[in-house]
Length: 354
Image (cartoon, rainbow, N blue to C red; front, side, top):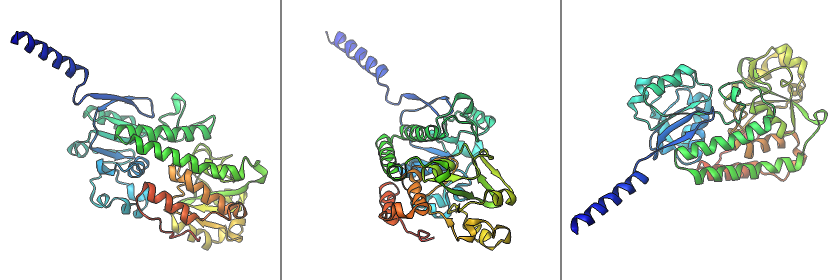
C-alpha cells in the first residue's frame, strides 16, 4: 500500500515538473522577425542600443542592465546619467554595430539587446556564444525592410506608431515589465491626441516649412520618425522630398529650401551657435527671423521614435510653430508630469525658453 502511494506521488510530481518546469525557457519574436529563446526569468541584460536603454529606464528596469553600448552618452546626452548613476561605471562591451564577445560573455547576460541594423556577423557571433539576442527597431516594417537603417515605408505614421507599441511590449515582455510597458503606451498615445485635436490634418501649403539641423550639415529626410514628428506638429519637413533617411546635405540645398524654422536637437547645442554665426546661413528666413530653436531633451527628433517625443515632444514643437493654438499649455508642467511618472525625477527646464 505504501509503495503504491509512493509511486503515485512520484508520478504526480514528475507530471507536474514536466508541465510546469521551474525555470523553463520561452520564445519571443524580435522586431526583425527572429524567434529567440530566452530564459523564463531575465535578470541580466546587456544593451547595445540607446533607444532600448532609454525605454528600460522608463519602465523601471535599469536594475537589470549589466552592460551598455559605448556611445550611450553621445546618443542620449551626458545628462542621461541622472536617471541611473550606475551608468557612470557600467561596462561597455560593444556598440550599435560592433561587439567584444569576450567582454559580453564575461557579464553573463540572460539577453543581449541590439539594434535592428546590427551587422549579420555581429548577430551570428553573439548566437555562437550562446547569448540570446533580441533586435529592436521600434518600427512595424515589411519583411524585407526590417533589418534596414533607412527603410522604405508605405505608411510612415502606421509603421512608427504601431512599431513603437510593438517594441515597448517586446522589451517589457523580456524583462518582466508588462504592466509598466502598457502604462507607458497608454499615457503616450493619450497625450499625443492633444496635438491632433488642435491642428488636425493641415494641408501642405499651410504648414510651417521647417528644417532639422544636425552637425556637419546632416539632416533627416523621409523614412525617419523625425519627419513624422514634424508632420504631427504641423510642420513641413523641407528635406523630405529629396532626401531619404539620415544624410549630409549642402548649404546650397538648405538655402534653396529656405525654411521658416530650424530645429536643433538638445544634444547638439553647438550647431545653433554655428548657424547663427556663419554668414552662409544669414539669408535663410529662419535665421533672419531668429527662429532657430534648440529642442529640450524630451523632444527627441531621432530617426527612431521615443514615447516622450510622441507624448510631449510633438506638443513642444507644435507650440513653437503655432503658439496661439497652444497658449494654455504649460510645457514645464507637462514635462514634469512625464518625468515624474517614467523617469522618477523632476524635469528641469534648462532650455525651455529658447
